Amino acid sequence: MPDAGLTITAEIDGRCVSRSEVLEWEAGRASKVCKKLGVTAPPSDLAAQRQALVARKLELGHETLERLLARELQWSERGARLLARLSRGRRRLCTIELTGNSGSAEVMPRYYQDAMETGDEAALLAACPDHYILCASGDGLQQVVETTGGSPLAARIFLDESDLSAATTEADQAFPVQWVAVGGTSPNGPSTGAIRHQFRDEPHGFTVRLTGEFPAATPPTLIRAHQWHLACEFSNWIEAANSLAD
Image 1: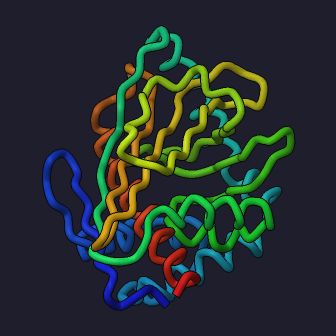
Image 2 (image 1 turned 180 degrees about the horizontal axis):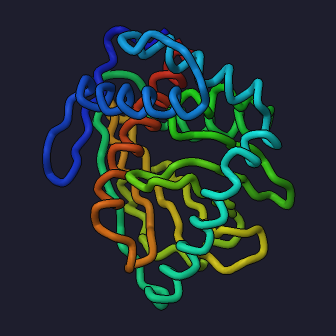
């Protein structure tokens, strides 16, 4: 269970967003994905919805999920490539900050990596209803199938942490823990974006700066919606990582 004393607050577009608001956003997304996957869970019980969605996704498995999402993945890949061509290498940033009044944020990237390396997909799926597949895909890459922000379509992204030359966001030296990766729609294709997530523990809590780099032609509405996706998944991962550390 999450540390009862840990309170995480998000800053989105300069506005302070409470944990309860982020959970309300998550509940809305959970209801939509439950309907999409034929999951029955009490709409007023977010924890039950999380568990039911994770169980359903694991039950279906990667092959069936990919078949269910095949058309969405096809169209989102085409869209991503078009946006990348229109953007000509320019990026639009999606950035938020999280602050906590206790606990550690620097433990979270290790929590994620451990789950990825051991194949504990349940821990990765549980962080956001819009996660469908998160796994190692060979050659040091990670495969992520998710609905990004406000997009109506699920997308497949391959994250590469070895060649970071396409990432444009500079590291802030005030954050000792950096998680950086370049993303593309295929294992060997060109990059269409990147992430730089930065973590700093403090005497009485922590600060996290999360940045996703999207093609510059990405509509701002999708960027704004993805800010909530980031707040949801990272708040949940931080709580889960701290519950193990206690």
